[in-house]
Image (cartoon, rainbow, N blue to C red; front, side):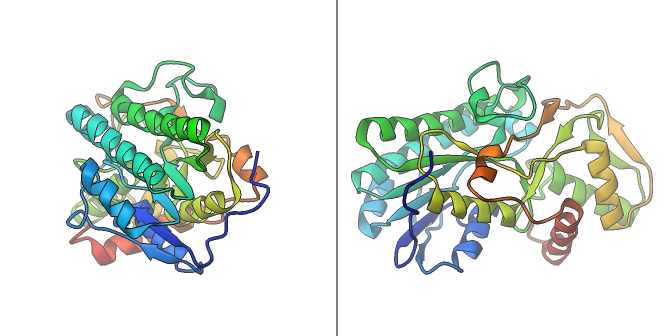
Length: 316
């Protein structure tokens, strides 16, 4: 069910945890259009894995709303290489923040997860009620388990204390401030970087897996807009999927990226590398019922992301 009265941000303090990440920075851009005070903290200011420091920070700044966008994130390789870090760090961050919000009577909390919370072979498109109905995809289960725990923490605090804590699960995101490091990036930024190198140095363009798996991609500015919409208009125990409702194969994605970058050479699919989950498409009917739909088309979004990468490639 939705809130009988929207949660107004006017004149309120909103703490964006993880504001330097791709989603966090998009949230800060989006919140600039709201009549609210945006609170941020760098890792030098606050280590969210430190419970005492997190409790003290939230008590001191007294935010009215907290958006938990802080997380340790990465692709298949990073998850496989650092499973303990992905599990422990994310558990610590979310547990410290959610408990701190309760102790300081924060009015509203929005916890952000990921579409990887769903079982590997869950029916498509992925409905919110598919959670915990089957085994997870092994290549990212450490991150997924931590995010599932965050959802359950928010639900538990709602049940036990009546806290207005909600959760949103974005699909695969891309856009400005993405991570283009080939050792830890997700598929789309990695593909943009490799396509640019192939255009500059000559092909082929290397792609992990068969290219047959399907993925949904949402521009991060669309995601931020959806998240603020949820923060203001949703209050219920069930989490909300955030996506565009359509997907492409990795081979189709490679074609779009090649066209945007200006690469017209061969594409080499490395079938010795894992594909991951066969398909991940979100059912976004719950979000649509709240009155929100995506606006940025995939090729349009990839083109703007490529321009950002070209302008920031030294630090991306």
